[in-house]
Length: 127
Image (cartoon, rainbow, N blue to C red; front, side):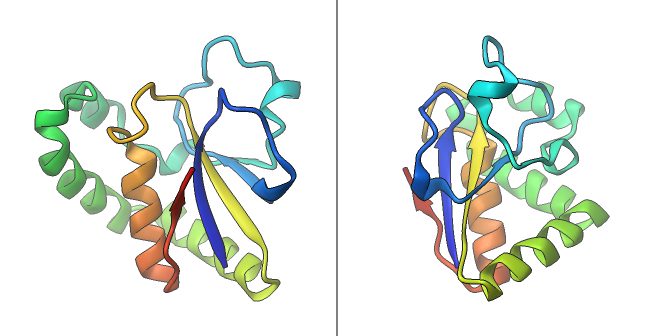
C-alpha cells in the first residue's frame, strides 16, 4: 500500500488515489469540488483540547505526538480507518491523507501517517 500526505491546498493529482481529509475542521477557502475528497475522517483528528494546547508550536511537537498517539490508541474510529486502509492495501491502492496546516513538517497528518504506516506495515511518503 502507498500512503501519502499532502496539503489540501495543493492540486489533486491522479496519483493521489483515495483522498482522505484528516482535519476536524473544513479548510478555509477550499470548495468541495476543489477538495475532490473520497472520505472525511474528522473523528481521527486531534481532539479540540489537544489541538488548542498544541497550537502547531514546533517546541511542543514531540509531546503533542505522544498525546495524539494516545488519543489514536483509544479511538474506535482509528481502528475503523485502519481496517479501511488495510482493504485498500489489499487492492494495491494509494491513499493520501490531506491536511490544512501551513507547515508541512509541523502537523498532525505526519504523526497520523507514521502511526497508520506502522500499523499497516507501510512507510508513508510525505509529498
